[in-house]
Length: 501
Image (cartoon, rainbow, N blue to C red; front, top):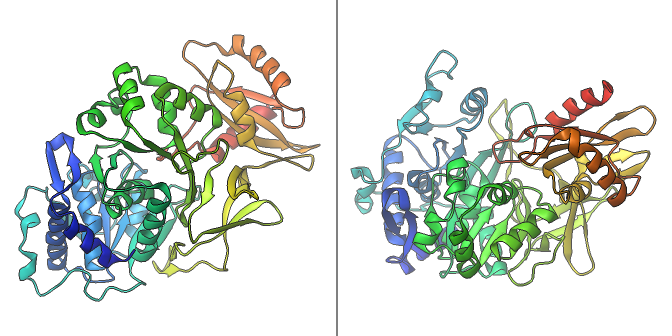
């Protein structure tokens, strides 16, 4: 798929609904969304943005954010994401290192640009208007510029500052062609088309929000119901928008699945899900087998696990009706996966990132080598199925034996008192590392009562070599902006607790 194909999608689906915005009681057809993006592209040009320039998006989820991605695609500019859920210092780091021509912000995010610690006012700043304002109805055809004029395969569409584990967020740059090519491959493999209607509740500042739940559906001619994002309030009223607007496809994270299992008491919503939802895609983090089974039982719908990275986009996925438990599916067309001598999965894909952003020069540095190390340990079977055993850096090496934390976590989650768990390695002078399990108990459970039960459960269900030597309890497990458990933070805490015993 090429950028020019997006112009044809807008023309071929001109009057069909694309973006449904329940909070505003508004629906944009493909044609209306396309025209809004062209109008915004014209205004960005008025602000001095040209092909190859960078535009920082300091915005919360909103339809204008979605339009901005397409405006930059048509203009040949690059969207640089600054997630407002990050710490103030991290947002300032993004603004200082983006090398941007323009910062686009909203009323909800303007505070990041104020105060003595804000970055110097050297980059032009522009308050994003609302869709109903006149600029989105610009007669773009009167401008000398035409959409995608001068487009090349080297054009960058996004620079995404991830929440990684480094001291500051790292930035991954992707070309327009890699994003659209990966979207087309995924849509074809999953059978996604115009009859699908997705619920959008992921942060648009990350790949899941702008790629999985926005660009890919658009490329398939599917429609999207846009919500502000997933949180405590939306979890309690999760099914309202899907039921009112006919959603039949979801993109969720493992953290969202777990949250719904804990707080969703909407039996009408569950019944509606069993009847109406046809596809539930899950990615952006490891999915524990017990969570998958519990969700499928509670909601009566197949959970389709996938595998990908910010750097590679989607690499493998389970297709509807062909899902295999314990696997992240088969590799997508054009993608290759293999393992090295240490069991790490290596990827060769035409959709690989253009590179990382160098923090000093703000230049994009291409990746080295033909095969990209994913950082995940796993296998590729003779049947073509990909299985993930854990993050390579998270593997616990106990007396020379590699132990998969995810495998131990899957077992511990079967205990009826455990709400969440993280398994990590802690130092041991004899074996090198010990297995430590940090659990969060279900409401109303007492650690003094449950600990003996959990120890007995581990003894009966986990082989001695993998059995946790250290059991700890916390009220909450630390998580990042995307809901992933911050194991590095837990590892330091657990090591201190273990040493004090």
